[in-house]
Length: 160
Image (tube, rainbow, N blue to C red; front, top):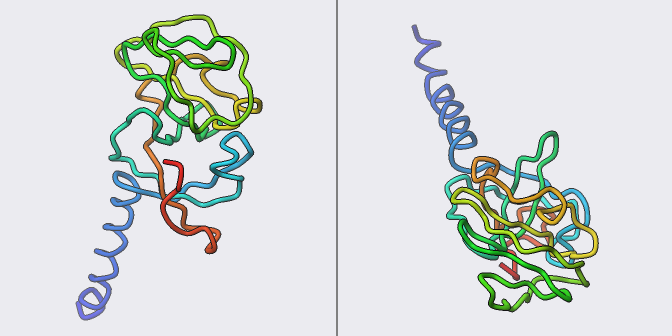
């Protein structure tokens, strides 16, 4: 009985950590250059599973065997089109202050009520909605805007 009293606080801590990581936040690693120059690869970020999905937020997408880190461009029920490297939402050109490089044209589509259009900041080197199509909300694991490693970059992501 004494041993149970001694380990009880540790069991509670372990349960709280597991619940926190499962439902609230967990670390996630950036792999690749698709979010350059915002992220360069090999950063460790905090994935916020409760974060609100908004335009220009960085999200983690569950794409089969990979986790893709992308930026939300189009929201549910919006019409998206790309012409001459310019992004149009509902027929209006948006200021693309995150995109780096040119992007090919993308024919006009209208997102469904549970779909998002995501793109990597490295417009010339990103597997995103331009290739894999709109992303269902159920495929979005959460949002991120905080780097925890490397230590010289620790803090809020500047361009988010």
